[in-house]
Structure formats: structure tokens, C-alpha cells
Length: 438
Image 1 (cartoon, rainbow, N blue to C red):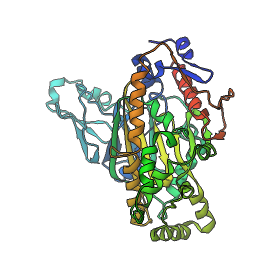
Image 2 (cartoon, rainbow, N blue to C red):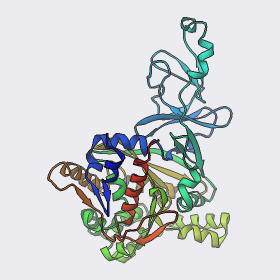
Image 3 (spheres, helix red, strand yellow):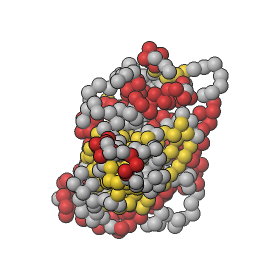
Image 4 (cartoon, one colour):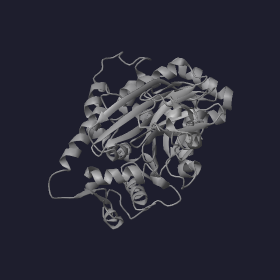
């Protein structure tokens, strides 16, 4: 296992050693020191409205259950029976009174405490004294912000609010404030994509503004070749998102970005800039209905502030992507050093027209689903990168574009689109987590 000194040598002056992406021992350390310490998104309040509601989720490679107990509290515990270690719950979510292990029928309440054991007398007279030790093991901490639930496997560390910081909290605030009815609901299932590459390649790519015009040119060219009349109310969002990847490199470079404490970051929105490509997106009637509903809730000035909040990705390090404009989030689940799953979720805004939700679903399918004509480009490149980093003598991956020795401390570092400061900030956070030994 690499020592702290060896880990420190892997990140240096705008470059990182390729072992960050290829070494199974480093991956194992990431699971314990990054995913085992940080606050990780595990679900949403709308999935746990009633007593008995539950969902299954992951923290790194660890499978967990999050449940709404009869006392009104949410509890997170490992999905592992205290008897023989079997997975207790295989369903993605639902409502239940108890969780019953499918192996030997040990039963647990929705706070994780032990409910019943078959033939309990076989465990001896002292078994009742051990009951409190035989519930499902709880995750150390659970908390939420604006309905978005996070858990941490570490009893120590900053609070969730401090971990997120004001810039990330602003993204969640905007996500919920966009709902004229005051709440958002996770709906429509999820998309799942798997790629044969390291998880960090995805979070780096998602704020890499130099690549869209280059890598996604086939999708952009196809959108430009659509015949007259192809852009209608039903297809406007897909066309706008596809064309937006064709902004010029100068336009990408002018986009606002911010590197934040704890490895978080954000990049500005760009879909509205498709008008510069010569094919403005349609303005369907439901958009005006939505604007009116938002003004009725917040009044005109506040409603305009909410709509003017323009970000494409706010990344909550290490594995969450938040996009209020498209009503969606994405989650990365590392599987092995060279295999990653990406899950996409879409939310319905209370009080908004149904057409808005339908557009959000189409946007998720277009960009973050197995049928995507955009993300498939990214995943293909990731897999080729993963393979190519295994050969040759050169060990360093270069991240020096815009490098001036900056390091994010307590405040955001504002920058421009193609500066690689956001990725370097992720690597600094990686180093902070990896070199702190509990």
C-alpha cells in the first residue's frame, strides 16, 4: 500500500502520475479515504416521504439502505445482515414495515434495529442482551440540504453545510427555488451507463471546456444538417443541447468557471448560446406559463434572479453533478479501478407545466443515457485513455493549462472556461483526502 510520502509524489506542479487512474491499491485507498470520509449523496426526501419508505444506494463500493422510520427520522445503514453478512434488501426502493434477510429470515426495523430471529431460543439465554449489537450497522452520519440527502462514513469532519459551502448550496437553492410549488420530486426512474475506465476521468471531463467542440463534432454536424421544420416544440431542447457543444473554442474559453473548497467547482451555462450558431431554440408556450407561475410565487425580481442563475454543472466532489437548469443530477459510482457506473436522475418541479418535465426527461436521455449521441463519445475516449495509460515510459498526465501555482483554500477561485484550474483543484482535494490517515 502506498505511503503518504509516495502519494504526495503523485501530484506535483500541474501534473499527476498515471497511477492515479490505473493502480488498484490507490483505488482501494480512495474508497476508504475519499468515499469513506466525504459527504456522499445518497437520495432525496421525495423518495422517503412516508414512514416505511426506503431506498438503496451506495457510498463508494459499499451498499446502503436509507429509510424513513416511524419516529420521522431518516436512517442510513449498511445493506448487510448481522447474522451471516448477506445482502438484506435487493429492491431499489419502496415501502416496508421490516427488512427481512432472504438467507435466514432475520428481520430488521426501518431504523436498522433487530426485530425478530427465527428459532431464537437456539442462540441461548443471553441473546436478548446482544440484540442492540445485532441490528444493521449504521452509517456514521446522515444529513440533508434542501431535501438532498447525504451520508458520511466518518464520525469526524465538517458538517454537511460547511462541506457544501455557499457556492454549492446556491445550486441546490436554485434547483428547488425553480419549482413554483416550492418542492421538487425525483421521478421517472434513472439512466445507467457503465464505462471501462477510472471514475476520475468523468469528473475531470465534465468541466473540461476545451473538448466539446472537438470531440462532439459529429453530433453537432448532425444537428446542423437537420432539414427545415425539424426543430419543433418537442425537439427544441435536444437540438439546443446538441448545438451548444459546437460553440467555438473562444466562446468556451470566455465561459465563467469557479474552483471551490473541498474539490467542488462549477461551470457556467451555455445552452442559451446556441443562437450564436444560427439556429435559435424555440420558445414554446409552456415556458411563458412556467414564468408566470414562478412570478406568482416569488414576484418578478426574484423570479428573474432564479432564471438568470446559469450553470451547467455544479460538481460536488467526489461524485455528484447538479444541473438546476435541466432539473437533473448525475452520480458516479466507482466499481473497480477501471470500471465506473454513472446514474442519471430527473426531477419534476411542483407547479411547473408537465411539458417542462417531459423536456427534462428528453434532455437526460439525450446527454446522459446509453442512447446518448454525446456521452458515448466521452466514454469511448475514457476507455481508450484507460488502456493507453498502461503502456509507454511517460508517467505524467499534464494539467498545466493556465497554471500559476494557485490553490483553493477558503474561497472560490474564479477563472475562464479552458483553464484547467478546476481539475487541479480536484487533484488538490484528492491529495488532502488521501494523505490524511485516520
